[in-house]
Length: 286
View 1 (tube, one colour):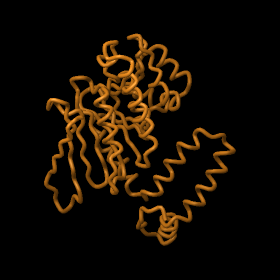
View 2 (cartoon, rainbow, N blue to C red):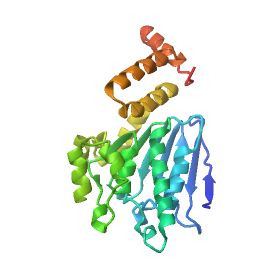
View 3 (cartoon, rainbow, N blue to C red):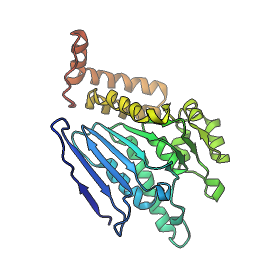
View 4 (cartoon, helix red, strand yellow):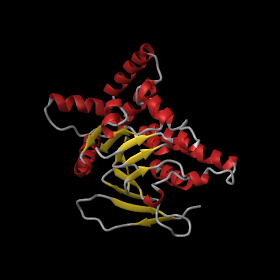
């Protein structure tokens, strides 16, 4: 198994909690991930630019662990990357015949679990993209809840060019963008620009590179200033209702709204609005 190295850094009274972790390659190589958590926000950074942040089995395992780690104070996850490539997708060196079919199965099973859990967890996940997101890297972006990208970013599913059609990357892609756009991306492998990705619905917002950090922080603040319990309830139903017919969605949505209104934080939100004051959230499901 991979070694997990914890680096605890001094913190000031202003910062309630700060913890940084590096997930190291076997043999003590360059860390694949860097994880910094403070004030309820977990920043996960793909930190292996030499491989174009390839999603090797090891990277997938470590990324999955970093996403799923349970800390009560966690409110938001920001997923970014070092270098000019957010992620080039799977490590093709792991997909040759010498690794064998069973190993290949492990890679795609772990990838599937990661992508599903990005949506299944109650915590909002923001992709912070500044560069190329290709193949499973594009899949990773499409699986996040919110995507903030720079105008230098691009997105593609070019697997067919190397004889491996991007079948699994296409799963979240076709659920994010119109059919004609996804078909063009999957069948041609040609990249789309950040502006095209925004118009298609793959990206939430694009900004100049120098504004990326501030825009991500603005989004994080908008999430963390709300009730944790209410956001968790909303995210769960948001994805659930996408698979429903409109009549069923309205029926269940009305019940969810009634439950939400009668939560402690639901009533606190209404009271604070009426009383013209800031809400004091309990962050509980009560």
